[in-house]
Image: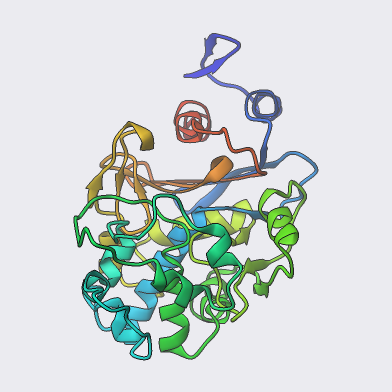
Length: 336
């Protein structure tokens, strides 16, 4: 049942749905939907074409989770229980700092790593020459490992730092080689903002982007945001997850890892719409998990109904109902 102008209607055609989305969710740029492994619906708004890309914000985090799994599969990382500092033996620990020595990759993946800040230090980290080292400087703290959920965008940059250091590849090249190109996503390149103004423009830009991944001055792709994808790119990622890491008979990511990252680790409160958190993926319910980025960028995977719904959206920070919108209006349309 779809709700439009306060009325519940059984169904609508594609043109009606297009107009409905334009009215109700005006910052949506693209949608791509898969059912039983086939694309069953796609559409575009706001002068976007199907092949255009959009900055998908924090949905980037979920892609990084897949890359960590690939790094594990290939032996670049031994275990998620490895202490973070194992990968940075040259890092100078501050006197009296003990907590940082206990932080593991799993803490970063589950957002239970402790940090020495109340609010994310955007200026300090983003103005540094090496964001990984700068993020390490804020990792730890006097409270120790509390197990509390602390959602971080900048702190998890350490994860892409680890992938780059262990593989010897830039993260974007690692992603191109082992994930993007194998599933038919166009090759991406790094994008470095030369000024703070360029950085801000990239983050809030409403126009179509290119196939880029925002990076730090060392060429390491940002882990918490920064990827530019089309909705069809995102749908391919979602379908790979739905297929337990297999693409045309080839295991790109281990099925065990897909199961692990989409398993609830922490139950979040009302601030996060009472969803649970896995490994950089949101768990909506026992059958649905999602990559969710600011402004309503979403990879929605319903494992029970064999459905993938991908949505790209230009910057509009007050969008908090995109999952509800998908469930109430998009999912019923493609299930008819």
